[in-house]
Length: 161
Ligand code: HEC
Image 1 (cartoon, helix red, strand yellow):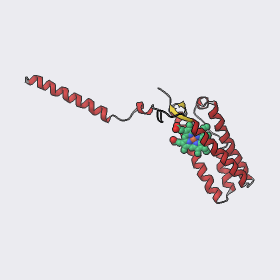
Image 2 (cartoon, rainbow, N blue to C red):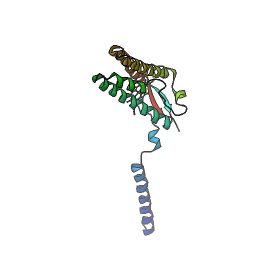
Image 3 (cartoon, rainbow, N blue to C red):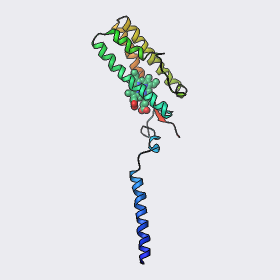
Image 4 (tube, rainbow, N blue to C red):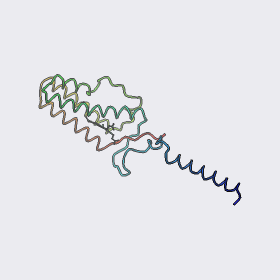
């Protein structure tokens, strides 16, 4: 092999290594993010949302779980005033400002359960204002049933680009 040829071969090998390095260590980018966050055979109906909508709705979800914990603590303290305030924050019409198009992206079944859950928070508030632990318990069960039914039926996926 001539010197020139082996130099060319070395340069080619170096280029190949650089390309392989990029493939191996490239940051996980948009391609990975646009994969559904579920297994292949997940039977739940997928709801496609854009980035802003996804971030908003998942933050809301985490807020629901925080509210459920706060309600538990307040109930343990027998603090119906606090219960009413916590529940009111998740009741319908509590001054939320969802990103545009979010409501339209929700299927009817999803909306039904969403409303059932919001309504149940309103009933929790009413029950707390009347210091009625039984009505509060029933309303909270209704809200949690809506959480669980919806989680059984639906999942979110990033909108295709
Ligand atoms: C109308 C439908 C619906 C209702 C009602 C609902 N959720 Fe969700 N929630 C979802 C969907 C869909 C996801 C995404 C699941 C997925 O993609 O795997 C989700 C995700 C979540 C997550 C994960 C958030 C994250 O950052 O990944 C939490 C926590 C959660 N929900 C809590 C709750 C709680 C608590 C309630 C009831 C008080 C509730 N949700 C009510 C549909 C709902």
